[in-house]
Amino acid sequence: MFLIILNYKKDMSKKLPILILFFAISFSLFAQHYSNIIQGRIMDVDKNIPVIGATLNLRFNSDVYTAKTDSSGNYNITTFVRYLDGKYDINITHPDYYELNGVVLVKEISEHNFGLKHKREVVKTIDTVVQPLSKLEGFASNNWTLLVDMSSSMGDNNILPVLKSGLNDIVDYFRSEDKITLLTFSSGISEILPPTNGNNKDKIHNAIASLIKVGGTTNGASAIKSAFQKASENYINNGNNRILIFTDGMFTSGAKEYKNIEKILADYAQKNINCSIFLLGKPTDYVIKQLEFLANAGEGTFAVLKDETTAKQKMLDEAKLVRK
Image 1: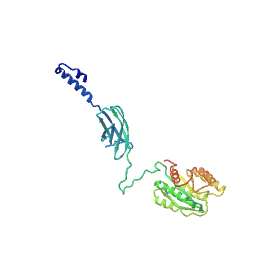
Image 2: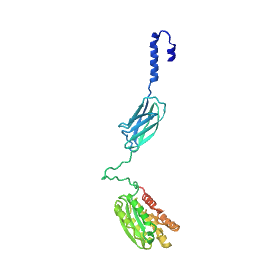
Image 3: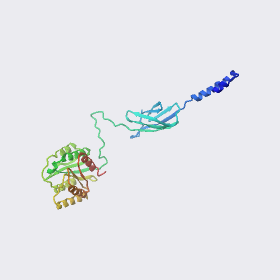
Image 4: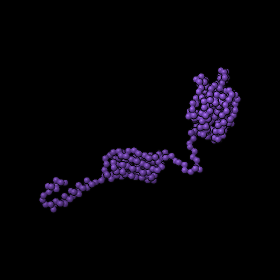
């Protein structure tokens, strides 16, 4: 432009329209605005429904462009300054959803869809009770006969609190179709809780709380027979029918009785009534080996319950052994 102005010497009046036209074209070229269109949709990732009223903030260097989603979850952002293709920061917010931050590639026309995660709903009224999804959802009904060793040695080393913690925890998850029976044994056998449905939680918790008094010697063979009889009477077809024995040591005396118990466990396992054995306290390697063998004969679980955390997890695992 300056060369034309400096070299122009003659007949200014005739050349003026051409010069004005040149300036007009030049100004139009330099003043031209460019636009980029960024559009897309925002959905609820869990329910697959549009998120209405979400706010998008797209930052181009020092400029920020904002848009809100409509009733279909759609948004549209148009910029009016030319930018080179590149990645730019985006921020998406909604009061009911977790904030989303990231970068998007922007071209002349770009489409980007996003998903937002809904925040956990909060119960606002004290008379409304929301029941969480049961941890036993999808698993078969449980028919448990608990057989607890209450001989003198069970009073040592914080054994009973560990046992009670594990049992109380699983009872909280039990459903109405689950059934639990509680027997104790030492010199004799006592029925602390008759077969009770899992929704009678107060009754079951009270029975567990009553496991306090210990004494006498261990006589496990006859107790195991009684436990299997109870389990048979309350048998649930296609259910998790199981004897759970809790002890801190051997509950048999002599090789003959040991073999007799082994046979009982194996026979009932063929009838789909299994036996799991849980050791508490500080059992010896010999006791562990012997009782693990019996649990295998009963096609059940064997574990040492070292603390409350272990006890709770093992009880939950035990309730999930059979799927519907």
